[in-house]
Image (cartoon, rainbow over all chains, first blue to last red):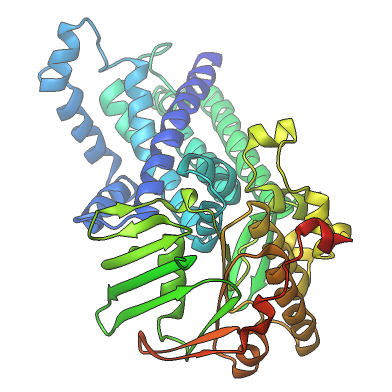
Length: 232
Length: 238
């Protein structure tokens, strides 16, 4: 019973790390830049949220399956992605990405442009502006996105089943283990796992809400509402 | 002698275009005109936040922008102070950190900046606010902090976008006086944008009237105070 729990945590944590980096970078680019085909790109980014997980799973199979170009290339290099827990990481990351992207983008766009302009006139380069102005001010939104991505990755079932399979001790995460337990009539295991994942998910969201309320001050300035981290 | 600031700015927008040309030596230059006449665009072009379609900008002999020679110096290398209309103070930093933001960190560590923070805070009467966050400041206090922050980097030109419009009349009066004094102490040109006639008449050494992106008139006040011997920063502090 412990195997699925540890595996789920491992998969979700690693998937969240990928989602954090990629989501932050893409959100930053789309929040402040205008380019040809931006609407198309943004719609594609949001697609994993609305598509059935089976469609994503199928898409990933086509992408990294043994007979695909990328999968074949990886096989030649001695790397098998499909039906390993890394495939579960990939599936979770794809499904969780829109949550991170959406939150981070909203957080970036809510920051007053004149703050970044002011930093520029004070002699700062773009790197310093990002790490000293943009990131700290957008942090509550970014963290919210990260936590929600983690929770979503933890619950990922459909796409994971298709690309990683349901191999006990290898790729069987909590949702898959619950499914198998119910299928084989092992209600005791199913109930315990349901309890664990519900509890972990509840605590995550509960803590996030508490933290956001405590840490974020919303103050009105003219008509616009800005969000910033408050300090003791 | 060449003027301190030379600028020729042409910038096209869908509905109108900005075409201005002016030079400036010392004192406070007021850009006066109704909202939407392109005043802020002119400030942004001087600071480098916006790029003119064509033109020429130079300050103290250094060329910042020249469409002819393909020169466009980035904002952070121009050393132009900018006080924004809504002050743009960093909400997550204390007053002190805001004021120190423009000082490079290696100078901060070695305490190598020429202007002491305390002197500047003292001059603007905000020493007691050092530890506060912008959200706990009044409008007038925010304005002083924004001024201090812009002056700490020792700019060669200071731009002020509607600096007094959000303040009550009493604060406005005292800040008007201080702005004039600051300019005399600092001895750098100020370019100030306003749509208030009263502000223009009390502050301006020279006024450019802007309408629909064009300069429609220019007035210089009796610039007698330019002949006065300038105070040094040290003298002024005493």
